[in-house]
Image (cartoon, rainbow, N blue to C red; front, side):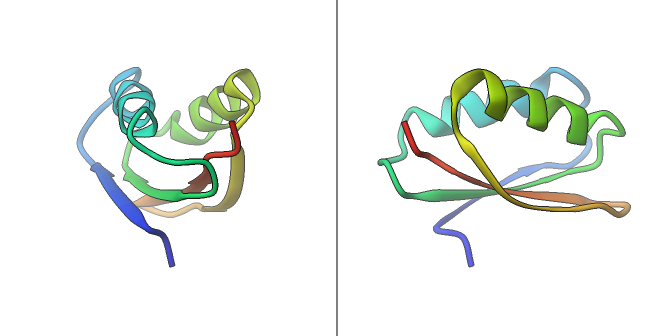
Length: 74
């Protein structure tokens, strides 16, 4: 269960990542954000973003609606 949710369904690259970055500014270390997206490139984008920013991808679910659970660690 995540502490915060973000619906990025219907948005294409780079908007899901832009919205994730903005949401992360308001999170405290240790908090989690669940992101739902339909962009076919979402997995690659979110994996690259967590590597670049040093955050942690806790879980990723593939499907028509992709779900990523990300934890703020920095």
